[in-house]
Length: 431
Image (tube, rainbow, N blue to C red; front, side):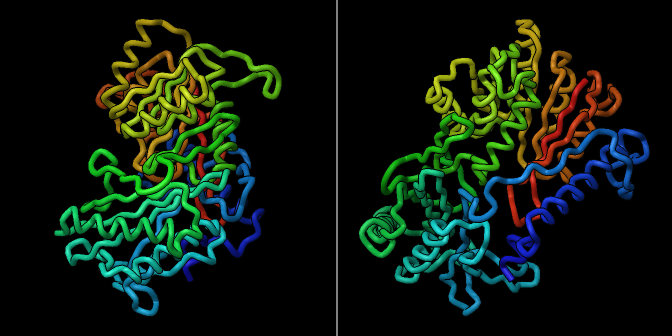
């Protein structure tokens, strides 16, 4: 039952999965074609299958199909047997009130290292005198655990804890028990490289709001992508499938800055690559040999710190990372680029599911130097579709979209998530 929720395509052969994903992407993109051709007037129009006005390539497969996840978060709640100290994934719905927590041992996308930490954490909280925190207002303390691993085999665990009314001294006792369990007790089989603890009275909490406390081991793990090394902190964003991320990023690099002799000597394209929502800087750093300058913009300060560290780690000297909201930072960056007259500008955007703020779209659209824009989306049928339309619609002074329209010229789906219906879509816009 859980496999049907988390990995619904697990019964299909891999070729069938890719075929299904391609059809889904074509269906979504035909809505964009329909809008551009005028057949679909609004987002609320009934979806009409319009002939695609640009090529959609076959889905690029993931080199690794099973056990590919390098990050998993396990929840704590009532199990099938009613035990509230069960660690796993939710099945059921809150609406129907039939939520149960089921362990993920049998999931095809889950590495053994992750499920081992989850099982040990479950054993630990069952030994603890403290209750689990199922709902914030009903008390309890032990919350979910996040596990991150890398290709080298290092494992980082992050335990989330609701302090409720405990004093710092009382919390310290339970932290010490957790540390002892994972370093000297039965949990030592996990061979943790890092163990973090975060006290949080909120669902999600940044490092700035409540610091990740390192109880054991190293503060970071490292991962390699296309010959570059990246530092991953407890809350940094990193693609969950490292092998497929290499496929994704080499595709993005080639669309941003085409290399006429791919596979031959590196050819410098020059100009600037603008990396919006740059995370820990992966796309910019990987593309840096092909351009004069990379400017990355990222909201999460810890990620910007990681990006700067990653650039230094790889001896990349032409990257600049700016912390803040893209819609606030971008107009200033754009006017600086215009006055500097530093040659062609390509842009890549890799926003969260909510898509880009309309002011970001406006700034990109109204910057005539940007001739190529690559949009990476994990949910093109959601808010990203609104962004696609704003990039491609006729100039609209009312919306302050005065720049020349972009046109989609190529779509490349990349399978980052085998056994699930999802994939990343890389969409090239040109003008």
